[in-house]
Amino acid sequence: MKITLCAACCHDEIVTFDGVVRHSFGGLFYNIAAFSSLCGPDDTVYPLTKLGEDRHAEAVAEMQRFDHLDLSGVQCVRGGKVTDVRLVYTSPGKRNECIRYPMPALQIDDFVPLLDSDAIAINFITATEIQLDTLCALRNRFRGFLAMDIHNLMMYLDDEGRMHRRNLEGWQDWLAPLNLAQMNEVECAYVLGREVVDEIPAYIEASQELLDAVGKSGPPHTPRIAAITLGERGSVIASEQNGSVVAAHCPARKIEKFVDATGCGDSFSAGFTMAYLQTADPILSNAAANIVAGANCEHAGLVSLTHMRNAHRHIADYYPELGSQ
Image (cartoon, rainbow, N blue to C red):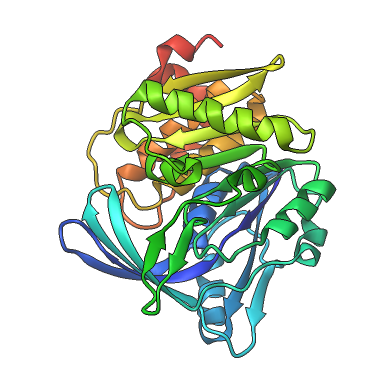
């Protein structure tokens, strides 16, 4: 399989909830770490990003530590700076962010060499990775699985680089081209523009609402899947099956020892996408994604998840009720 990853490459300063400070590359690196470690011998991951010249060589050298990568889509922005991000965790699962030097937007021509990918996964770190018109053009030309982690798409920067959320205007247009739209519970409220009762049934209804709205107006393609991640409560998804919307909750897998939530959304995205490409089953893919995200929580920093490769084959170990599917 050929997987393309689109996100800003960042240099992070992370202040954990217990006060530990770490410096490392982040952003796209978390997607690379998750997807590359889930790859089999015939799979290749193609990062597609624009890197500032100041840390380009250093970042590329770090990327070369990972297996299954083709770095031909990593572009150097002459005279530019790599995106700087400061993440301060206010609880084990919540954080404040400050960003400098957002990534320049990708254009449709940047995607042309990668249109034969089996999947393209977009993760909004800076909210500048790709513009809506480019996303629509990509959908018109790309026939594979198009996934997006909404993440920071609804964020804006103040004069000091601090990120703030606002409702995502025109969210139906952003979600309509996608096969998989992923967001967490906080992001879901800003997409829908209203509070969502913090209960599983309410998130199931929200996932159905997301899918129903975009299904009526978007271009014809399948599958359509909306996923809302809920941290320690797992995730809910809604998907189109036989012309109707089906929604389901999957609890989080058991975690032996929680260490760090950084990168869990990226691991969920990788787990879901890789499982879907192999099973074409949204329910099983959701379970596999929770298995992979749970493994991420048990480690700090950029995590190797090679032991979670083909997570869909281990569903019976964590979710016996799904094991026979």
